Length: 219
Image (cartoon, rainbow, N blue to C red):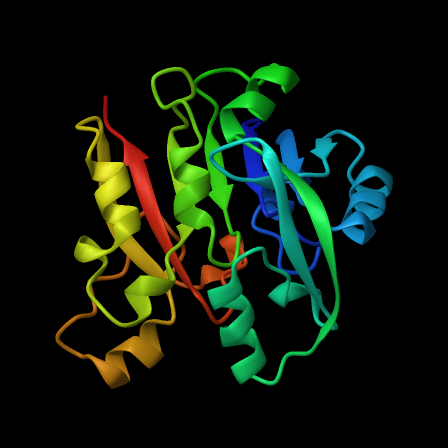
């Protein structure tokens, strides 16, 4: 649609590497969520049509330790994702206790329509928790774009993201975007066909160097 609605969880910077920025440029608007206070100020300044919430997302409302890196792309609540970032040369500059809430609670508070167009989830290791924190009977986006790091090493049909989403019969997990060339070099027999619903350049979803799965609502 010309003016759709999105919820961007783990929204990061409002422009750079954003999965929702190009949709915003095309007239879409919605809810952006990120625990980083630096990103909070930028979102409110540069994307005023969106509703921004400064929280992490998890299955229960609590506080979790948040690892902030010198490169904020590595910021995470997940100790395994922290360790992976450290192995890539990332450096933790500070940690903090940050409030986390279920996705369904924030969707309800902001009044987003139940059948909104796009849910983007990019939460550096907590992506499955984010999916599980939604009320899928009430909030049923048309398309779900979710980081699926397991799919870098195995077929996407056997990842936990696939299991969570296809447990609901009205969802179709159709493809993997992201590191196509790298995956083809490592596992040529495991690379699925390019997704017909995405541009062959992944730039429209700002997929840079990681692995995104796409799930469509079919009922």
